Each structure stands twice: as C-alpha cells, then as structure tokens.
Length: 394
Picture 1 (cartoon, rainbow, N blue to C red):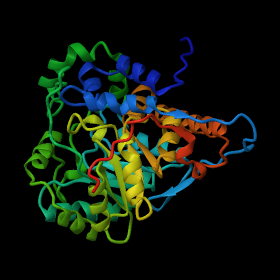
Picture 2 (picture 1 turned 90 degrees about the vertical axis):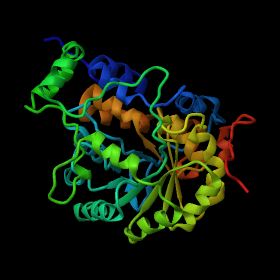
Picture 3 (picture 1 turned 180 degrees about the vertical axis):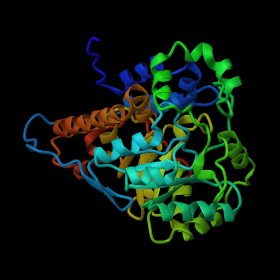
C-alpha cells in the first residue's frame, strides 16, 4: 500500500479532508451558522480585515508562548472550546482531550458531548466542564457535583444560543439514534465514505448519539434531541441565576461564554464570574451579530482588569490568535478548527491543528519583534476605521 501523508498544513486543508471523509449529514452538522449565515461569514472575514505592524530587525532569538488562564498553566494561548456530540470519530472528546494534553493545553467539555466527563478528565486533567441552563436547579446541581467529583478544574456556562434552526443552505438530517432503520436510511451517504465507516466498524460500535453528561444519577443517557428539547423548554436564566450557579462552584474558575456587550460584561463581573468568553456560538446564535473580534476591544477595555477575557469564534490560524491577544484577549478557544482535524485524522489531526496554531503564533511574534505573547499590544495591529463594534456601552 502506498504511503499516505495524513499531515495537513492549514485548517482549511483539514476542513477539505473532513468534507471528503465524513458522510454528508455529519459534515453538514459541523457547519455553523443560522439564517443567512451573515454572522458565520463575519466571524471568519473580520480577522482578514486586521493587519500587522511588523519590525525587520531586533527580534528576540526565542519566544515564550506560555500563559496562565482559568487557573491553568498552558503552553500557548489556545484552548479547546466545548462542542456537542462528536460523531466525527469513534474516540470523540477523548481523542481531543489526549491531543490537548499532548500539546500542553486545556479543554472544555460540552455537557452535550458524547463521552462521559470522567473519561475526558482522565485523558486531560486540565478539563473544564461546560453547562447550559437546562432543567431544574436540582438537576443542574447534580451535573455540577458530577463534574466536581470527576476532577474538572473549571465550569463554563454557555448562554449564547437562541434556538434558531433555519439555514438558507439547508440543515442536515440528524437521527435520534442509530438503529437498523436509520442505517438503511443513511446507507447511501455512508457507503461512499468508507474510511469513516471503517473507523467505527473497527471499534465494533456504532456512532453514539446520546449525551451521557446529561444523564440523571444512576439513569440512562438521554438522546441528544431529548436533552435539547429540555433545554429549549427551560426558561432563560436571569443574572441572579448566573450568580446562583457561580455560588455552586465557588472555589474554582467559572467562565460565562457568549458575552458580546459591554453592559453584559459588567453584569457578569457583578455576578461573580472569573472569566468571560466573547463569543456568538460560532455564528449559531442570532444572525446579524458581529464577529467576536469586533466586539472584543470594547469588552476588554471595560472589564479586562477585573476578570479574564477570552475570545471564541472564527480563529483558524496562529496569526488570528495574535490579533485577538493584542486586542485584549487572554486566550482564544478553538471550536470548528479542531473538529476538522479530528475528522481528518483523529487525535493526530487535533494535534496537527494545535501545531498549526503554535507555528502561526511563533511566526507572528517573530515578525512583530515580541519575546512573549504577554508583550502584545494594540499598536501591533492595524485596525481599520469602523472595525470595532462597541455594543451596549453606557
């Protein structure tokens, strides 16, 4: 058999390979965005509007990429963002956790993930558990206690979601479970993706569409859409609710994910959170919301000396990371980028994506003449007039 090089040089290449490898419905489920896809497009395009102000001499011989965020020492300012059911690879979140650990960084595990929090923490002790405001307070406390017992080092509350389902390009068909009827229905698109089929066949297991981290104590894991339905039917939280959940996790990092407005960032500080993520859920939220990188500078200026500010959305290269750090983020979180890597080559593919990020950060720091990611500042970036969006300012 001829040697096949599975390495890829950019995230874009990983995405193309993922598209060739995955069944059409699985690939479609990974495409973010809602309605027109305006926000999805802006998440990616906005980084391209920013430029650099490089030096040509006097750069340090070595560069330090390490940082500390959410109580964790990590090798570079890139973390894994929590994403839902990962049927793109049999090892799913466990493979991602191993990859992140191998590259010295932390990860967020979604409560809608396909692997139990206990397995993921065992693979990467630097795991933060992500929750949605779903179900009763008693049920949420049970999830918090399970994460604490498993050894999660932090909690993430994600609130940037409006249950928008319509997509102009069409939404994928995702079943509740994999049974004989489902297998027959999806056979035409699966049979033409033999590598994906072989990866699951070699494990003797079918793709699991349940969400074990939403299971009640001692109970079975619900199917994804069952848990999703409960989430939809749960009344949205108030700021008092955010404070209450923070009080259930008082002695460890607690991040609120989905903040885009200055006034919301200030309320998050008042609610006692230790960090916020400037995010629009990868474009899967209210379409027409600007890219997080546009909202970041105003949010960071308003609260960055009180809590840690992270950015999540549209990051595809190390130079994007450097732009975000220079404009006020402590760290960025990767979502779709690592899923493309996972689909393309499993754990090694996720490591490949993280290596791409590291290499790009190194290159940008060299060009900017910086010795450390901590030295980055706004003057390193060319920000065009009208780029920044200041939402919710007094």
